[in-house]
Amino acid sequence: MTTNSIWLTILISSALIFIARIIGYNVPSSILAKERLQRITTLIPIVLLAALVGSQTMVKSGEVVIDHRLAGLLAGAIALRLKRSFLVVLVVAGLTGALVYNFI
Amino acid sequence: MGVAIPVGIYGAAFGAAGIAAGLSIWQTSALSLLLFSGASQFAIVGVIGAGGTLIAAILAGVLLGLRNGFYALRMAPLLGTSGIKRIVASHITIDESTLVALAQDQSDQDRVRQGFWFTGLGVFFFWNLFTLVGAFGASLLDDPSKWGLDSAVPAAFLALLWPQLTTTRLRVIALIAMATALLLSPFLSPGLPIISVVVIAFIAGWRAR
Image 1 (cartoon, rainbow over the protein chains, first blue to last red):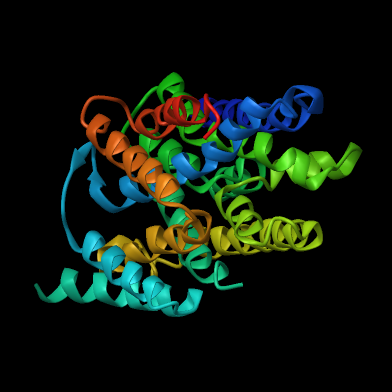
Image 2 (tube, each protein chain N blue to C red):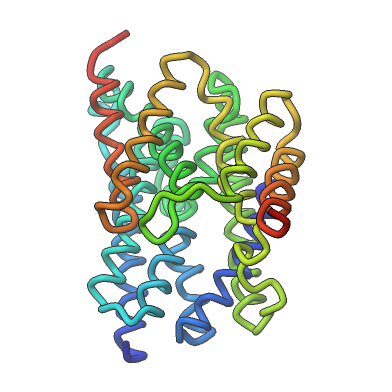
C-alpha cells in the first residue's frame, strides 16, 4: 500500500467506526424503551464479549487451537471463582500462560 | 485501574506492530487516536503488513470495531449524555469502558457512569501514550504473544464479563456465543465470527423469560 492509501484506510475505518458508535447513541430512546429491544441490547455485549474471549483464547490465524492461552484463561477463571481481585486474575492468567508457553 | 496494565502492554505492542507493518509513527498514532479500538487497529495493520488491499484492511477493521456500535446502544440510556459529551462518550465506547460500567451495580447510576468515563478516558490516555512508546522503537516489549503473556487479555475481559453472568441462563447464552464464534472462525474472515453472535442475542432476547 502507498502512504496515501494507508492514510485513506486509517481515515475511512476511523470514520466508519465513529459513525457506528454515534448511531448507537442516537437511536431514539422510545425505540430502546421497548422491552424486547431492551432484552436484546442487554444481551448483545454479553454475547460479543464471550465470543471475543473465546476467539482471543483459541483462534490463531483462522484456526481453532488449544495452547498456552487456554491454560492461562482457565487459571484466571479459577482465580475468579475464588473471588480474587482483578489484578490477581490477570497475573495468574498471564503467568500461567507464559509458563506453559515457555516450559511445556 | 487494573485495566491499564494489559492496555499499556498491548498499546506498546500495537505501536511496534504498526511500524513493523510499514506505517509511519504518525499513521500508527493516528489509528490509536482516531479509531481507538484495539482489535480493529491490530487487524488493519495486520492486513496492511500482509500486503492486503485498502478494502480488505477497512473491512477487517470495521468488522472488528462494529461491536462498539452495539455497546453504544447499550450505554446510551445508562449515560444519558448529549451534545459534545455524547460525541466524547461515543469515541471512548470500547470493550473496557462498557464492561467496567456494566460490571457496576446497575441500580447505582453514578457508579455506572463513573466506571464508564474513568475507564474510557484512562484507557484512551494509556493506549495512545503506549502506542507512541511502542512506535518509537520500544521493540523491548515487542509482541506480548512472544512471551506467552497474551492470555492476560482474554482473562481481563473474562473478569469483567463474570459479574454480568448472574443466572445459569446467561452463562449458557455466553457459552453458546463463545462456541459459535469458535465454530465459525475457520470459515469466516477475522471479525465476522464475533459479530455474528449478535444473532444469538436476538434469538435469546426475543421472548420474555
